[in-house]
Length: 289
Length: 276
Image (cartoon, rainbow over all chains, first blue to last red; front, side, top):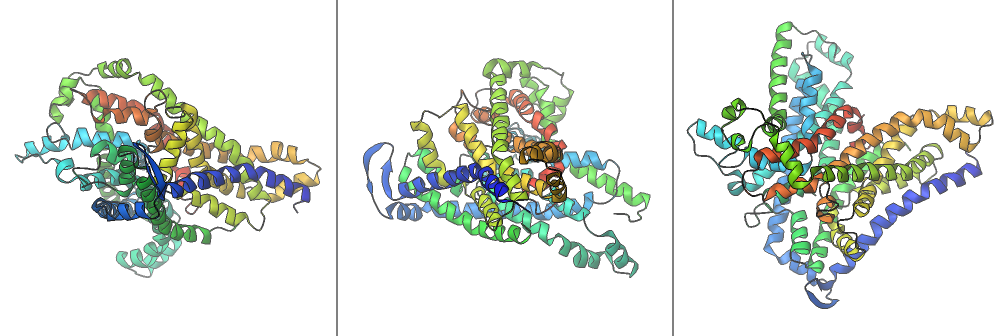
């Protein structure tokens, strides 16, 4: 079917994208790898090869383990809230009701809000202990206002990020639900299968694939949550809300430690790749190229 | 789902869905409402604020103090520019993979996707140093190029899944009728591909508009898009709630409207075709 001429043309058309992506992947990553073995501080003219020292210092820094734990808590916390909330919400929105279009639009909206806006809106208008909405509500109930970002910084960041990603999970699960075979459902209903077993034997297996996709894609994005932390807590108080991404940023651009930051970057790449391998397998299986 | 449901059931679901929908939407709604009140009223209790007189002062003040229009323009240039460049590179690539697939096409697609999985911090340091040495920090062209590269895999993938759905029989028929490669692309393929290209473009503009890692790292003021502009409110002076609300409303309104039109494409684009 394809002639030799069209094959050559196809290769030519493919090459710019391939070459660009290859360079984008190899050049900076290669430099990061190179820097990670160098003693290289922007404030210190002494440079040189130090072997694995940067990695050792980065890992021996207690902040690294805190950041790693915070990253895991953030990712898992957001995943639990968005996946469970997303399933419940998708099931609800899949029922017939008045004004479906409008409710859908309201539910999806937070996903389109840029991270710096949602973080600042939550920080000031809602979580501020003096003028925020939550403080007003607490006062109205005769309670002491709670300073969310100082006393529960990580939980607050999780709440903000979950609010942004709940629409994504809901939308994907709702799309998957709508492709559920309704005849199968009706047949089960006629055979007298109760709601609960229809849910666990028909709906859940059907949703498994969509849930896996939601978890994997969100994990990729959640591992690099940055703006939400930068504008709300700056990783603090102390390191209470520092994630791996934020720690690498702080190390390289706030402490000017290029070597150490690079080592941290490589560690982040390795961790993300472990997740990515699962995602690639999953998508590759469904690809009929 | 074509299942029978009583009116009572429908009413209960309606109330629940509207309640939850309202709750999720509330932070955005509240921001919009607050932007139409004065600074003094914005920090009053919620009901007192709603009862206070409406005002458009904060919009004028935001523009005057921080030149909102320029940041808005920067966002437009960066998001539309990076999307257009990505399309120019991706359309031929996706076309050739969809219609002239080789043994390696699948591996190539997976590899492209894998570049998207690389966390940005992994290349933050070299990118920052390269940009500094080339004088590209706080430069519109520099950020645009980075966002092009970041979103290129998604653009290729989305286009590929759309092109895949165009039946190749039509192309063969055109070839039999003696159409050259050029006219095949121009007159047969392009008209059929326009909807797919349009939705790819829409989703990519949204993603680029909201991108908040590279735009925050690589710009400071001159080339700063709205993400950076809003971030400058994280350590403000004096009363600023109404101004922050006005700035936020203006920053999210265009993309909120675009986004609502692209719900379906969003699912497909962000799951790389795994959920349609």
